[in-house]
Amino acid sequence: HPLKTGKFQIPALQVGQLQTSPIDIEIKPIPVQTGAPKEGQPLFITMAVDSDAEHFYVQQHIPLVVKLYYKHEIRQGRINDPQPDSASLEKLGDDTNYESQYNGQNYKVFERRYSLLVEKSGQLTIPAVSFQGYMQKPQSYGGQQGYDPFSSFILRSPLNNQGQPVSVRSEPLKLEIESHPPEFDGNQWLPAEELKLEDSWTSNPPTFRVGEPVSRTIT
Image (cartoon, rainbow, N blue to C red; front, side):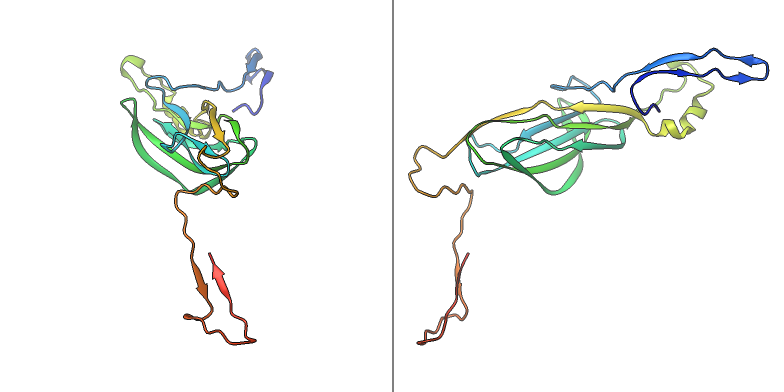
């Protein structure tokens, strides 16, 4: 497998009195598939906000989900996490794997979830998330493809077992972040789906005596 791009020459090989000619080759970068997936595409990646909310606000935790859809076995690879400006991104929980359908096609899915916390209002652009790795595609034997006498050797080759290099990238995501709802007129803005205020004392019920401290904890 080539380790870098550029132009190279494969030296001549000699067997007994026979010798091949050197071969000039050019190694190009792995083509990156971007944008919306095409019908039947074996590999693609998506990024979306996992919320039905119509408005997003400063300091609100926004759920973000990245999904890698693939039809064939992934041998190795990595997802490059998105890096938005003016916002922090925290990975939530463990990655999950399952099977699902997309546009009527069966796929295996690798899912990763994040919590996005935005620091200022305005339009926020979350850069595209990408995946680079190796995918093992199924081999054809006999029939219309014909018989290849070297196929058994190629399938046993350690280099072939690594799979075909692949690279996919999602579309970037744009969100409009508001400072707070128009009806809010308070001094402290704390967006939350649920808020609880609890208090506790060192002893319950508390006993008050002159000169003795009593602790009260508010959470």
